[in-house]
Image 1: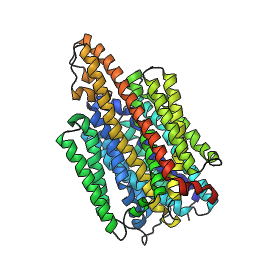
Image 2: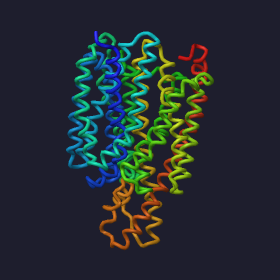
Image 3: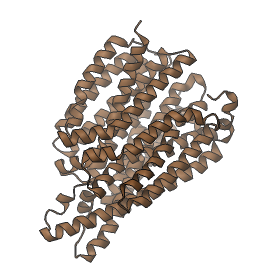
Image 4: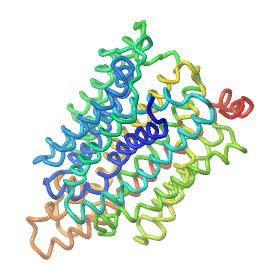
Length: 505
């Protein structure tokens, strides 16, 4: 039998690597855009390809780990993650980078599900389980906090490619630790693998994300965009039909007939689309609006990340006064206020005001971080918590990837509209390709063909146009958070209100 402390530290380290890789890239997106001559659509896919593959594969990955063995699948996931990281670092075009990011997302899904399963299998008593999840949460929080700063330091001091290369020695250490400290475990009798369901879910989600991201270039009413949305909706409808006929479905859809469960899932979805997605857009704003380097942008994001970590640790105290439903609603409303405050501060170009808005948003996100998972699991019988955890994690990352696509489209459209107005005053004409490079942080390439005297004018217009687009995204995210808070308040009342009486699960 392995030392359980080292088992916990190893699995927490594996999960922290995923969180680190999820957030470390965002601050380097402008550098990637300039290096690979990428448009904003290309840059969106750097984030979305990873998230989409990750979210789509989480549910089947859990079944694979249960069937084949969690330790074996964790080692396989680390190998896939390492190879994909190497290809990311070597990428010579945006397409190659995005394909490698998608493969890395598959590896990350194998890692997360197997690591969580090992922790759940190893720690049984209530006290040791509480300690285990506390250590796991701390590791995730530290990774989220240092990711922007680390990404900025590596990008500024060396090159963005080393963000991916440095994964290789970390993976080697983790593989050694897994070999040494993690016992093999499996539960093949209860594992169900649904390849058709996984394929339909992934394909449907891909078509919708493809439509959202490319709509800013192809046009929202274009035939291509319409066909992508219709194909995505049709595939997801078929997925629902297939799952309802399965004896061992990937997702028990009957859960979605329960209002309280829908309310809890909406809380997770609102957290993802209104709070976590800001980790992608904030670095673009800080570099485009303030002209910060990657490392300064990483430092400038610390108010958001630190507030999130601190409030995550204080959330248990809040549970003495509020049930899960109350914390979800409160956290979503705080996020809404923080997004609107940051939007109002964005145009001022005063970092102190923007940082204050970030702190408010981060505080709301911190309250939601652990409570969202807990609220979903509180609605599901204990013997089905594996599936509940899969639904919770999938909801979180589906929310992020949908928000990157939808809010990214809003950012591109509003930036384009604002830039066209400003450009018209100076006799400039904006093309969709030019707008894409402006939003991606590659304005130098966008204006490279203009006379030198006009380049400074165009860059200033681009700066103000991006600020306007970013503020519009924050207003929309704040509105969505408020709407979801109202829905959670109505839907989640029966079970979540009863949670304290049951001993505050």
